[in-house]
Image 1 (cartoon, rainbow, N blue to C red):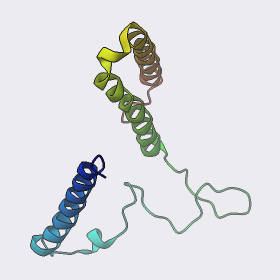
Image 2: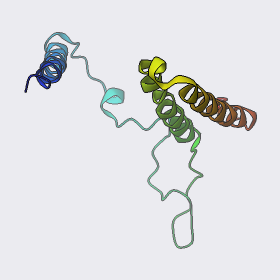
Image 3: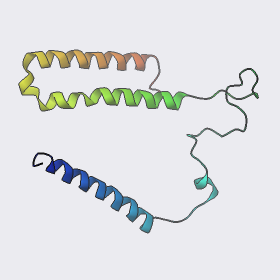
Length: 126
């Protein structure tokens, strides 16, 4: 129990801070609501009553822009890959030359994927 106590205390502090922040925002935050704020957030896409895509047997829909979602997925992929650098940084001394070579290959792999995505135009906002 002694080894887990600091983690439990930190988790309790994090949960308490989250609950306190949400409660404080609800109490002292602005209460001015308008029609635009009450509408669902659609990422800039105007909601339509028709089916999206316009496949066979459906109403004629519009093409659904997926650029926002592709950018979000790229962010998640590269963010998760970069998280693997933290354990390496913590145990840098203990891993030796093998750890350095493995991390160099990993960083090279991430860099090649990043350069490919950059060349393909996946990172530009049109």
